[in-house]
Image (cartoon, rainbow, N blue to C red; front, side, top):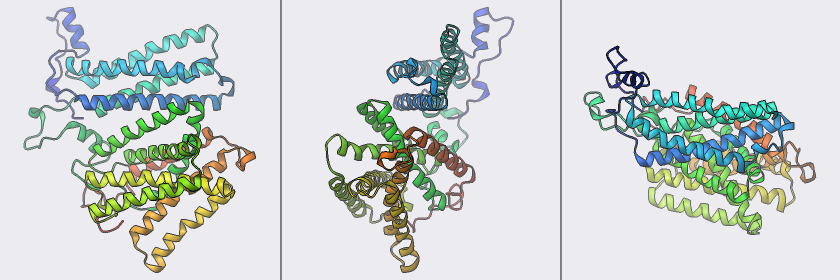
Length: 449
């Protein structure tokens, strides 16, 4: 978002002002802001992101809390119907309050942040009360952290995705009609405000993070289907995928955390899509695997016939990006079905399947280096194989002993993988190792996959 000029802020209170005027000036309420108001479409997107992000954050905190403090398992306020309902109500109130604040204050972020702090402290009062009445200390602490997480997610989503935009007079002389949302989502998060490529360079970090996201998607999907009603889990997965892809399409260049968040949500929902066909509709894996292969082939043919290329380094238009993400979703579904087919239908087991796919992923690399196989073909072949590779090892770590796993549990495996992914994404954001020559200074290459 743009930074409002000091002139737009209310003047400090003076002795000549009435007590009411001094109080309003103290909290920077002037009822005459000169910035533009958030667009309804971005308020709706921010609301959706807040709901999904807050519920997911709550579920993760409950999982962490019950793992770290086993005695809190079964605690009444850790049940999804209990905290889910209150979370939605709280986020809805905040999303109504934000446009009110932007219409009454020339310093909306300043005021909204302080309101968020006050409301969070107020919501801690019931937590302290139930602690006083004898509720488990560790469970109450988790509840307080959940309230804080909801406030952080909701505040960040609203002020970042639906900011108060700069009025034309506040822009620098000669500046174009830049929407402050574009500035927020690109420049402030490591990007540039000119159109660029939307995908990272193919480095070792790319492949490591890609395999981690595939494994995380498998474990996370399996975990949420168990702790939430399956229909609710799939619905949340789909909505979260749509919201994150909308965010990815909105930014004007590759931004590491947004891109990898989109890949992670594709991993989760792609797993759900493949599993639903098998578990809910009884479609065998040896049928769903060729089905998803056909879907992927159709996407490839459509993409190439329209754009004359399948290179990921030409992802610089909305239509090419749409083809790219359709391909990614199809590869995840195909990889999930193929991995389950080898492990379950062919009775190879998770470890053997993982080792087999680890060897298989070396085939396109060797073919490219030794025999100069088309680099685009080699890339997409390897990309598809990363899915069953990561999923097979995730299942091996998480599944019970009776079906060939190490019985560490889906939740624990998912948490470890999430921490690893976050670590790599933070590293890439800081070092920009996956941006060739720094896109903000040089044009993007278009000749390689």
